[in-house]
Length: 247
Image 1 (cartoon, rainbow, N blue to C red):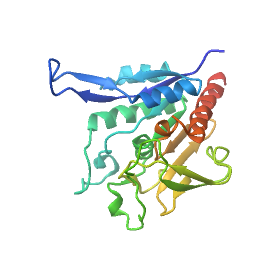
Image 2 (cartoon, rainbow, N blue to C red):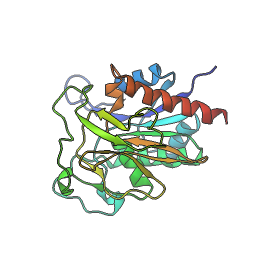
Image 3 (cartoon, helix red, strand yellow):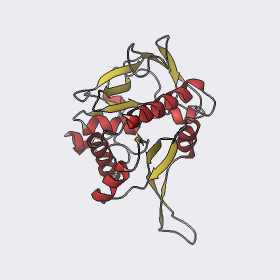
């Protein structure tokens, strides 16, 4: 059986020193690549660019897409002015990722959004973000951990009858956390499927015969090194991609 091809959105790394100073490289963290391979998929890097026709071809030639983590999302995309605690933005990447979402929906390709990837999907469908955790007065736990990336540091409560529910059958999970932006207004068509103890949205989904989008706020690719639950999450996504590919 042919393995499904999973497109992974990339970022840009600018070299500042040495013989190649000024040159830029497209990259993704190796943890995404390994997680896809171990889940039975074939990882395919999608280099960031501004050519809409090329981005459309990217989507047409893969079976599913992972939207990776990275910079803050540009607030003007959801109708807000930038606030004091907004972090580094990269509007070119916002456009790239937004186009990946649009074409994935057009061509019915499943999407798995991770951290920023979940946020950009929510924004693309009309939702909004808190530009910093401090702008939500209910936040009371640490969401940017000072621990190794594969270490889970806080709990989540997982809804029943959702994509995550058989991965977390007890309705409780433990995750890592590296973010300072969170979902504010949830986009139409999406459902919240996991929250942290202080009410932060940790997972969302929009699933039908026409659309498949699952997003998580944490970084399961980093945990998948030694965490069976994180591995199951990627395997279930790859299996879903394979199933929809056949249909």
